Image (cartoon, rainbow, N blue to C red; front, side, top):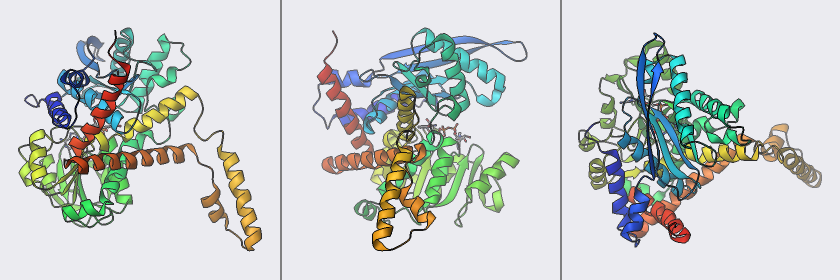
Length: 467
Ligand code: NAD
């Protein structure tokens, strides 16, 4: 990882896209830089009584919209460059899917499995306290969420710590991705993976684009390989399979497996829980290298683990025609160029994994409004639809079954509304960037950046530079 300059890679993609716009250099520089970079170190008293110094960051990339928003990552690879890159990706991502936040990201340099649950709780609470001291957290300042290595549990500890120091009525909106009883929203856990599914489905539904790739249109029957079965990877795989695609290859830390017959996701998850590995599952082809999965035959490759996974070592051997970037920064700029030459469609991270922040936005709105979506209108809506059905039954002298009545007349619940909002957002945003791609004859990543740059630049232009 050390020679991999993630922030530079993001900025290279930005610069390429900027060449298709007419904004002045100074404004483009202002969009690119990270507005605030906060580095913290603090002591952890370990369970065995020893003291260890923990290192972390929170980076607010852009204040063109506030609050800033972005996940918190727990990983041994976390460093300042990585957090800056991820924070900047958040700015572009939010712009692409029209979520009114600036970008931010947090990271703590720990390998989760090296610490007990109590130690993780102490690290999380102390890290939150450090954020609070400098106003790097708050419903109107900066709102964290889960990312690699963190879950709803850490978000619950963050919220509880925040509340100890703030009697603000909107405290719940200081962090998203929370468990439901703590003010979370239905659909947040699966949101990023579900968004990946909507994005890939939309790309596959485009007849012209699929023809260019030499593929049939539609998701049904397409094969895919996936790297990483964590929150994003597991849910992306689940919905792609439900949508008719076949999972033929899987990679986890310990290696990869492959079977043209298709792999049963739930059964594989159970197997890994029992055996601590995916290798040798059902006697399928097993490889010790995790990135071997990209060399295996499939229509779609879904990197869903970490950055820098499709790189100079494997870029020439990649078989898939569609690279669906569920993870952040999985493809290096060098690999991107080669894959483009090979005629691959790369659905970029800045768009494809935005489902998490979209539903986090819904959660933040729910917390600020202090009411569950659908609570006020659902029963009323359902009553009106049922009365319409009764009139139809009377005039047409027909009878709907209870199941038909439910399907037609049920009022929208919170999960229905979240899912519909996410689907709408992912479809619209795909078509926006695909149109820009065609207009300028560029690739989808560059098109996504062009779209983001224009949306951020216009805000800077309209608000002026203070003072
Ligand atoms: P996670 O911690 O839930 O899961 C990551 C998975 O990847 C784990 O199962 C881990 O064992 C596996 N993994 C690690 N190294 C691997 C390797 N070399 N090969 C194969 N598997 C490996 O993390 P996540 O939340 O699913 O995040 C995954 C990616 O998606 C990250 O790039 C993250 O920034 C991005 N992302 C996450 C969210 C979110 O809502 N969680 C939102 C947007 C983007």
